[in-house]
Image (cartoon, helix red, strand yellow):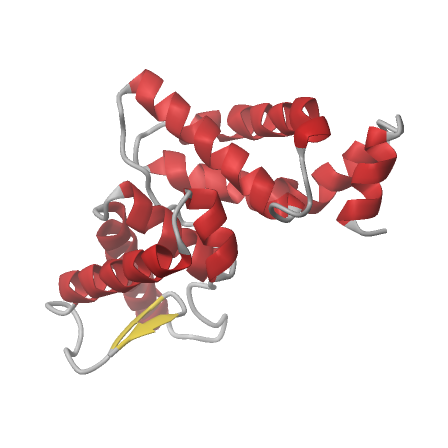
Length: 196
């Protein structure tokens, strides 16, 4: 059953269908929220804000229009706004990237030194991403970790597609320049993202 079919069933009164939507998106939304909260030291709130996101989405499902965006894009937008609202309440904090395990640290057969080096590199990347402005950080996480396309990211961030491309360009350039002292300047590879 597609998201659209589930949403139609929910709007027709089958509230049980919402649990299927939650099952489909809960892990991704939780990881996204956790990424945003980690740097602010609020990562323990991730599950609560994930629940709040799904609650808000359920309450507003009647206003969701498929022609405007996909359900997942709409849900990410609610998650982002929920987190930003909480960060403003807490301390206007920074959005961050966590050690989500999206990319394995190293193959299991790798030598301990290689695993340690890979872990150190990943930490350097996370620190570089944590220093990005919020919109650049969000765009980079949504593109590289959640694999969303430019249009979905634009909708979530309330930007144009060209603005998202610009945010991503600046984010990648910034991360690259931060990492160059630690890596060969001709080639910087970080967690599945490559910049030359």
